[in-house]
Length: 259
Image 1 (cartoon, one colour):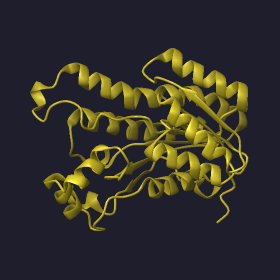
Image 2 (cartoon, helix red, strand yellow; image 1 turned 30 degrees about the vertical axis):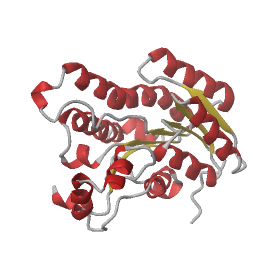
Image 3 (cartoon, helix red, strand yellow; image 1 turned 180 degrees about the vertical axis):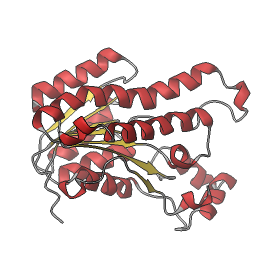
Image 4 (cartoon, one colour; image 1 turned 30 degrees about the horizontal axis):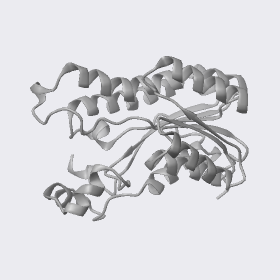
């Protein structure tokens, strides 16, 4: 299928590892020039080389998304290198395992940190990308949420942040002026995804009860892969998805049936 995004310019936040890396590489395979930002310089450099092997331009920027000046730096470097942004992937986030299982013992700072790292980071990058997209009358914004934000479950500070991301995309999609400028806003809600170096990898190695319980709850009988999430994201970025806006698509092997 021809996705018609060759030569577009994309930014993937948190693009040095896991789902972000998979999205960056999948966009590059379709001919997109891709910028990534993350904290891990070594990871950034590695992914930039992988992107360049696809025959497209790549930019890697070290960024702490909790610092507004770092976000400004990312946008300036992209503006200098690419001149525009056609596609924004709000992938950076986390905090699903932060805090205590005893909710009332979790400090307020955890709630705020998780909200800022997820929802407010998505707000800040999206607001800075929209002017480029409005000027060129075309844009795609996709935010990586979670099935917990979509359906519930998990720890409340994480769910609250992910629900806010979904709401942000839905609400922006309903803005007639943005829609008429050819910009779509969607979110993708992954279920458990096997990513190297994460808690799920350790849980699998230990064959823990948590891991076994999750596997039993998924109709497909397995965890997903970053590439499977990336494939859905790239479709949403394409011209084929021009009428898809305000949607939140679960990529979870059917797990959310239990909610």
